[in-house]
Image (cartoon, rainbow, N blue to C red; front, side, top):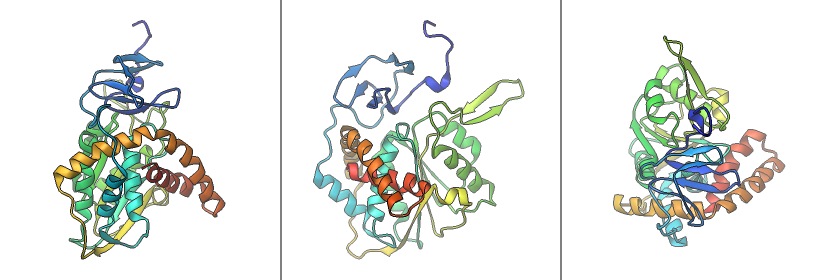
Length: 299
């Protein structure tokens, strides 16, 4: 009441958020900064941080080691990718997904390849690593489902058995949400819907998507620049397996490492972006590729 009219967009629930000073605030069972400072749940810099559930890691979580990073890169590189930096890009997507509400761009990723090559395994490992921040689903999804599960949250969408085809409503709905999520900022109302009673409801999405399907499918020009497509030709004979317990243990440590190195991401993002532009890439390529590569470099 002291702060005035309640605005839903100013409520920051479970997740990692960007404070006005450019540093990160992690809101879970505790509200804390990367330096270990604990704050009371409530109003900070005109934003509301309510008491929330588990974010998957906390200030007592040890940061991942260099060996942990190398191990997970080896796992992501266990498929025979067409792209030489596929493993690094997937790790970069994971880092960006952890802080999706704090970054300006949220690139999406489509993993394709023949049946049985390991696409679903990559998605499952990411689901285990992200823990409570992951919304994992299989097959065609509906707009209403996305509204209910992802609207106003910092959760990540992991969609298996996804075939990109804008002519199909389920695929089109996914692209619509992903398109808006790519660059939505805090002062944007997102998707606004009017109800029969005249009440206006806005759905804000800051959701990075990663999907897997057998074929690259089709995308509209607006989506091609927001999604990175990685094609796997098969699984390497010496592919490294990762047990669920190991994935669930290493994910929080990698999250803590990324949060601790947030300043590295901030510095790297602009540098990588400028390098891509200087090499002849356009602005959207710099936004998409620059975000993923800077995120990878942070690890």
